Image 1 (cartoon, protein in one colour):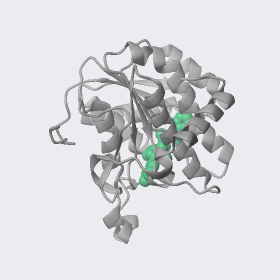
Image 2 (spheres, rainbow, N blue to C red; image 1 turned 120 degrees about the vertical axis):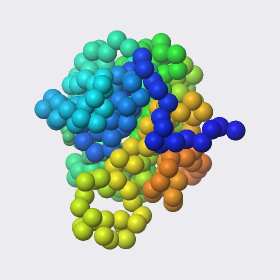
Image 3 (spheres, rainbow, N blue to C red; image 1 turned 45 degrees about the vertical axis):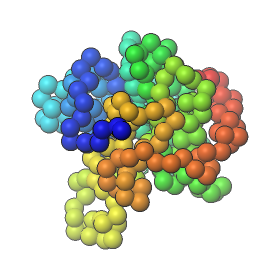
Image 4 (tube, rainbow, N blue to C red; image 1 turned 180 degrees about the vertical axis):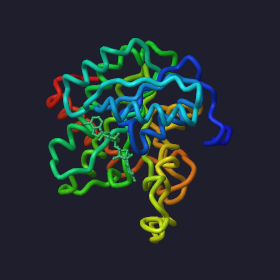
Length: 268
Ligand SMILES: NC(=O)c1ccc[n+]([C@@H]2O[C@H](COP(=O)([O-])OP(=O)(O)OC[C@H]3O[C@@H](n4cnc5c(N)ncnc54)[C@H](OP(=O)(O)O)[C@@H]3O)[C@@H](O)[C@H]2O)c1
């Protein structure tokens, strides 16, 4: 029986290096802060050095001996993604967290999915060389069953299908999918959003980070698993969830993979 995961008592990870994309804000910030508390080196992938500096100062205020550094990374620009991967010389896990919800469907697909697809390709030699390299992709409840016109859901579903397909194709690393449930800004004043029923159903972005952190650190997690919040998939402690429906469609996953290869010119 695996031991019960405790989000407040994370295993130590000194000597390990984790890259978190979109770590200057939101859930990614909290993933970076929680991983930094384990003694690991955490690399904050961010397109803004100023925002990354602010995030690192904040992490150090909570974790005084945090080992954190910034990596310049714009996921919508494959040149930037390649340059970022070239900067690293060792890596134990990458958390593909960055994501946007915007009207420009093409840019959203590039930032949410294709940039991470290429990043993982260029990081693979480092991850394979690590004792137990992990790729942690970030999906969404909406990505579990994406309607054709819902470009955000389709970009998130592509990331999730990529994560499962990577597990089937690549034996040298663990590929784990996570989704944060519904995560409002932890600093959102209670009188506004959290006073609505949503406040009962959703959680702060600090708790939204728990699934990704477990996917990185839990030794009992296996490749191809999906981790999400316990309560209706929306909030609470992270647990392993069944993979069903469109997410279990291997033909769909293979199609997304082939399209991603064509659009990026790389193959993880
Ligand atoms: N919040 C939720 O309820 C929820 C639910 C389901 C799934 N998710 C997923 O969880 C992840 C984090 O969401 P969040 O709510 O924390 O979002 P957020 O607060 O809006 O933060 C998004 C992060 O992604 C970064 N980013 C955006 N475009 C980028 C690019 N081209 N290159 C590099 N970084 C980029 C942002 O950096 P800048 O500061 O430079 O913009 C920011 O750090 C996303 O993948 C999202 O789809 C969230």
